[in-house]
Length: 340
Length: 259
View (cartoon, chains in turn orange, purple):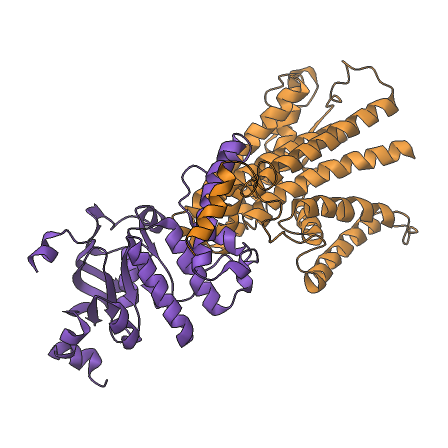
């Protein structure tokens, strides 16, 4: 039971990272990216081919690279490739200002990527995908199966907290404020000298890097990756989690990821099997998640933890620097009263 | 008179053309705007005032002609580039960022510099905090001036129409622009608030900006503008004080006639 729980929690932390990635794009910058799952997938593949040994050692398996590098090298490579791919797709998709144009282009790119990766075997072994990924640090640390599972959960939770910390810093920064301004009214942002294209592209790239890191961790969890693992439905599920948790709130993204994609499906496992059909349960789960999205939008459109619309927790170094810290702090008080 | 012409104008619009399909919205429009003046831009509906504002601010590209701000050509530049050159415009509808607080709205309007670089959200945060503190102090002072202190921390989307107008002035003042284009700032505003807006407009001028004001309320124009430009059918048909214009036959026929 404990082993099972640890495993589920590892997946929960990874899922939360993916939802955080969606939140940077859709929550912060308002980019309706319907092809998000391309980035976790590419992150997973890149991590795989960077850490796996040469493909030629196996029969009937082909993929690029095969550098047999460490976990960190794989993670870094995944992040870099995820970022580069975001630059390329974002540069095209965000070129026009219209949101529906962007959404269609992202879907098209994902379909192209999906088809290409499935059919072109030399890249990532086509439809069979890559497998045999070694558990991270499996050789260097000696732990039993349970000990190792706990260790891997630690890695995932650490990554989740680290990603949360970074995207939260970004949300609170002047960049985050500008990205939100573009989301709210881009013509006004233009009028005040912002370039919405560049700001959106930056958010798009950050989201892609986060997604790729999540994907790299995911492939460490499942130890194999093939096109079966990333149907277009996955993107929809991530959006469902974010909408229920709270769009544009990073804490809401984490809560939504756990609640909708981990706790809720686990609870539904307790249901009795339906008509002896093993496919019925996942299908019903997806239908219920769809229903949850509709109900959330209807009754609590901002999600469980809505976006913060105050300066509370907004960019500060140490507490309320604008009033309390010596020197600069006083400027605020003096200026404000002087010009009444 | 010699003094006035000796000083270089803030804005020169020279033979500017723009059409939509077959309709010539602005055809061969030319005028100059004196530095640090408040200049009214009036004319009947369809005269091309809004198009002119959109052309100057870069929301629409110019087909032909030149627009020069302080010796710098604006035509061919995008709206954000023109804004960074110091020309800020407002819109007929106040365009606040509804989910940002009032204070954030003003801060987000301040020139970006390199504060909005992504890496600065993680590194050198103390230096960034100092820059932000200076801006925040200025923003708070502006909001005090515009009577928005009570709503400083609430999302701008919850403001009343008039407060949104005032917020727009705070955002514009935050930029300390060379030139401001105000597109019907009185639209949907009650007369009492009108006086407050007039004070805000003069405040912008006192801070060194040149103001162009598109407005249908001729009384407001007369009370607040140094000089008035009248447009009709895409061209300038008269320029001068309101008094001069009342005796200008072309202007009376095209616009003031019934009044």
